[in-house]
Amino acid sequence: AQSVSQHNHHVILSEAASLELGCNYSYGGTVNLFWYVQYPGQHLQLLLKYFSGDPLVKGIKGFEAEFIKSKFSFNLRKPSVQWSDTAEYFCAVLMDSNYQLIWGAGTKLIIKP
Amino acid sequence: DVKVTQSSRYLVKRTGEKVFLECVQDMDHENMFWYRQDPGLGLRLIYFSYDVKMKEKGDIPEGYSVSREKKERFSLILESASTNQTSMYLCASSQIQGFGYTFGSGTRLTVV
Image (cartoon, rainbow over all chains, first blue to last red; front, side, top):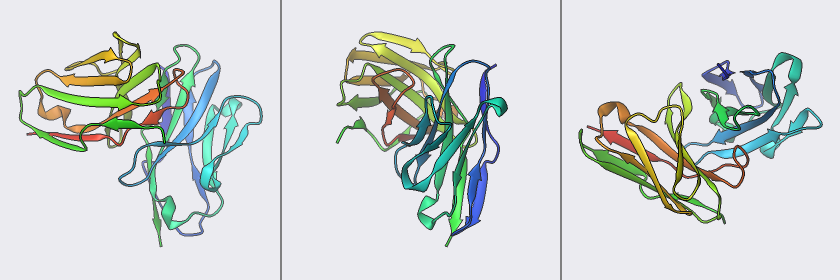
């Protein structure tokens, strides 16, 4: 079955630490990839997306993600996190088989001031 | 500013009650979605609609129904609420399926 895996349910970092959140999917066809973020008490919003072209995509607030097709991965990175990055992050994959978004379970990121 | 508006932020209902969750979007989007969000499970699709009066089951439709009589409004109905339906419910809309979802703020439903 098609699925999206986020490796960590909870990540705790200190400010200025580097961040990498893993996302893997199980599907051999064409995909479009998304990271969404949900800040405490706010609605889900798009952080960045990959459709085609350069596999390194840049999003808002200094986030970037790299699509590695051979590894079926789309990991989210930020070189130096801030306390305001505390949020839950969701990876989502659109597979061309059914054009429905498949969501990962989410990763709660807590940044210690 | 474009919006998806969910009618209630918090709801408390009794077991067996019929519950209506309302969602309205002002972007003239074709597609609308209802998800439930539970810790450790991410977002699970309940139902979606790709046109007025059209609906499709998602991954977990049991115990739910939906109504889309107008393009801008998509209602989720819990026919007989149960405690295992206590959850955060998210509505979303998009012009093209799978792309550019706009989410509402969510309704946290507690069934007692």
